[in-house]
Image 1 (cartoon, one colour):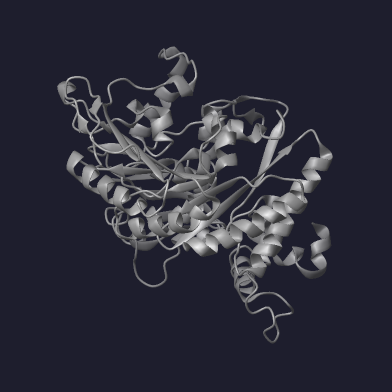
Image 2 (cartoon, rainbow, N blue to C red; image 1 turned 180 degrees about the vertical axis):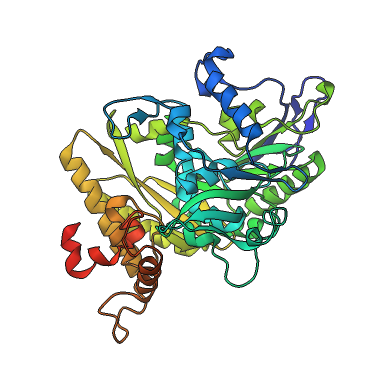
Length: 485
């Protein structure tokens, strides 16, 4: 049951049960505690000032009326954001800290994810950008400019006709090639247009916790229906108790919990929150709470400034990136690392639970805890498994690698496939997509990989661009040539 805001101080007067708590807050001061102490003087940010001035003079389009922006590749990225470092081949490096966020932009998927999170979108930023970034390329990208291995400059869609229509209509005439440059080595993207989301009139940070292990089944099914009916506008992330221990350092009084957000004016948020309350009543012991933020009308604010939402409530659902969750890699040691395994599973509660049991058992065999993060969408979920290891312990690293390989095999046996992979496992994961490997003349190579190889050989016969990425090797490194690797 909803609560009534006190207009004098932004607090709430409780009117409902404890199982559906909600608070209303006015966002008034930026929350910078989780960003660390930084020098905010102009001198400290002179590089960014010059970069902004350069961008204002460059041919980079911004379409505020259509909520889009075009981003263009620049020469000298590291010279702008980095520092000279003779220890690295390029001579330049990126500093640790907040600039690591910028460094992730150099990966197209992470770049997209960092800018598409937030109000009215369906995606998170930074922490999970690498997880979901490549998925976004098909959803929100509209128009790509890419350079092929022979130097040919190509513009997709309406970009081949007209600059002004290019970012407004994803199609064109004939095949659409935007997604061809995602997770591939067919070309280098030099420019792209991104459909963005307007700032919201309000935001509610929601948290749901359920007490039993088997509650995952109704939890997933309820979320799926709420997503399908647009009650929830961004995707929930479901985690188990160990995930909470890793990211917050506190013990949770639940087995599964999830974070999600609601966006819009007060009336819309209130209605959608009530629908969530009604839906989760089907799970005994479920606890749902929400904190709501609105622009400060006394300051003339029309839209909510995402930076004013405290980190504990935004959890990167407002588009504000953070390095805070990086502490989770210290789960098994101070000098920690991780491998993440993310098979795609149907958005079905029983399927999610069945795979959870098998994956949990497999993790235990190799001496690892099952740390889960289930990213739920309307029809599928990415069943993220974080494999944490101690980088100073060779046995730990070897076991983590062996666990990943075994999870790939177990997932394939259940009909599931990983959609991304560490560079060391790209060939392994590519082999999971094995339809057509028994076709006549295939030589055991799956049909999809044969298609990828034919495209690679045509566009890049000399194998110049990222040979082996996503398991796509040029001709000289295939077959007997594989020994050259």
